[in-house]
Length: 569
Image 1 (cartoon, rainbow, N blue to C red):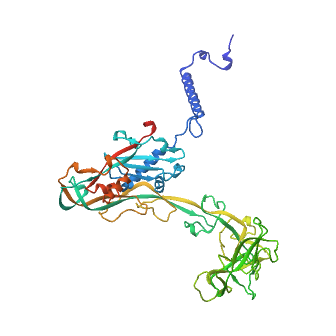
Image 2 (spheres, one colour; image 1 turned 180 degrees about the vertical axis):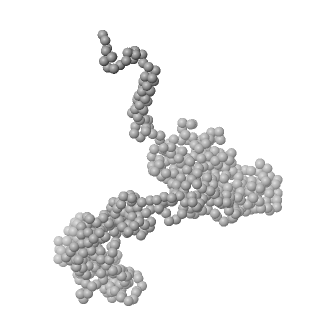
């Protein structure tokens, strides 16, 4: 059967079952492109939007690694806090690492700030052993480590093993010994095996670490343009006042919208009909203005003995009682109140003033003295000695209320409708404005930030910025001269301090190793605190291992105790 290719304009030369070389190449390229697209589709289908492969958990935060790194950096910057004697241990707590900006507090939000720390101890070979120790909701070192046991340097795992020490205190028995001349030497220059310490002097020198800083400035929004001084801003907003200002602080729950109106002010007046001052709000006059300091004075008219009151009730359980002045229970106008609850004495005379509180004037006994004072008088042009009994200092105000509401004008827009005003204030923004109590809200000061990096190296953060954080760019100052005065920094700077000790001494000869005797029975090793107490009881005034090492007549031996993680035991 004829295919009639000629009918479709094909040439007879193309009637072949085999493909041309060019067609094959095109087909191969197309197939490769399709294969690549299929692979990419499959990869995308096996990966979540976050880039994580389904079924695989993200890497957990490594608490130990983070706090250990921070602790080592802290000691790099504070080398004077490193232990210098074998068996000495120091710790830097998590709260200090956070204050120094060495860890992100968000990563340690579930950790106890005091019981999470990095511990460093000096081993017998002079090496420093660091141990991260954590007390967090999902990381508790105490439960991960095995019990404490005696060990050797071979058992110590760097940056992991928790080491502690016990001590054997020893003293030099120098009977028959010979003492040399008095000398004063640096500790490092002493070559004598045994010597008597007469005095020690510690010398210090330091250098500071200087940084460049990332400096953040807060630019606060105001209607009249932004300012970097937050205290100069009196405008508060419930929501951002402009698109560039998306951060806020200085929250207050006492923000109001303020207005003035053509309503009439009616002032509180005195008995003479004139505007009067008052330290407290008179009933019906909620607003005040002015405010002047004044002194109030009164005088003692007389003294008198307290009044006796019988506290009467129907029975012992009745909640209703009556205070009868000088009238026993069951008599007078309340004959049904026959039960005497108690007898009290009060400076209040309820016969003269039935509404007065007997309890308010209550005194301890009939022997107490009551005082009758005159009314308080304002001293207009003089003062008195404040004792809050006959003289007190107060602030007086003119109080008023509004009558006839009038048309309100809210500040600063001038709108007559509170809902059209967006600015809140905590105090009157201008004279004559009063707060609209119904608009009370929680509001904020809003700001935007800009950040720059300082070019000057300083030990402490430059002032005048909302936030200043150290960069990784730093340099050290030169070492200071040696001094006997304390050089500890108190302003938060990173300061490295070196010490050296000069000892006034006499060489001791005629003694040997056999002259060293232990202060404990059976050469028992004891905790550090017990060793210090034992030395002091033997008239050696020492407080630290360094003190012991500086005294040629005493010494200590150490026994190392260690705890390793349970899976490593």
